[in-house]
Image (tube, helix red, strand yellow):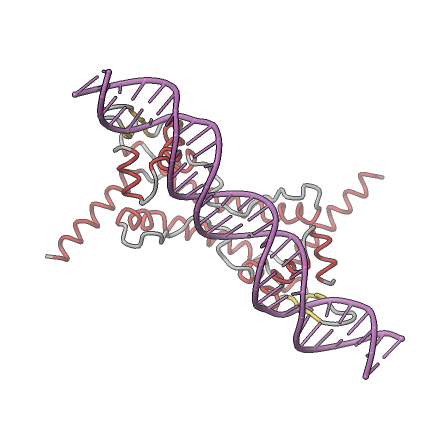
Length: 124
Length: 124
DNA sequence: TTTCATGTAACAATAATAGTTACGAATTAT
DNA sequence: ATAATTCGTAACTATTATTGTTACATGAAA
């Protein structure tokens, strides 16, 4: 698909699409081609692309808004909070990342197809 | 402490302090007094105030930036992503909340005091 | 009744994100 | 070659969310 097509699908702008896709391209998840017939395509089979790959490619600080605070490096209260909360955050993140690593785009596609089938059946 | 004192400690403004403290007050974690000798104080012992209490009082959407997306309610792709990711997020959140629930301000204060003691010892 | 402190509304400043325009570089069709 | 595409990217604008500020009302204590 071209950036323009994707932009229409996502209700946004082609440049915005390129900005985001650039991260995925740099991570080797997708590839882009220029000129006629160009656009975006996956760099490898869906079963070999995990959500963790994508998560890492797009920049990590998306999920965990809080985390070791660093606003006031010298603040001893903040340091205590970081110590006490740190482990809990690490555990929670580890669980999430493990699940991300174990889920591929092929899994997503399978779920999508199953839902589409149910929908068709429901409608008759 | 007064909002002004807190604002100086936190390098911010008294009104901003009041805005945040209002949430904690509504949750019964702190109380405020007006006039001479007024200001903020805890509503109950530190050992009876968990981080979960505070987390809930300040509004939950702080930690989990992503989560069941709701931008395009009709988007079937989004629905698939939500299904597949949903459980992982719930598990991760459950772990974090359990740890928050099990940690009180008294625990934080103990850690703080221990650190302060180490610091004094280090310095001689 | 004066002083001090919170409560809150209204507004301004700031920062982060998203969107837009413009143009260059690469690729393919004609 | 030349024209039509399409990505790459810089520069700028628009939008939104957060934070900070001002102003004034309310309540409490000296």
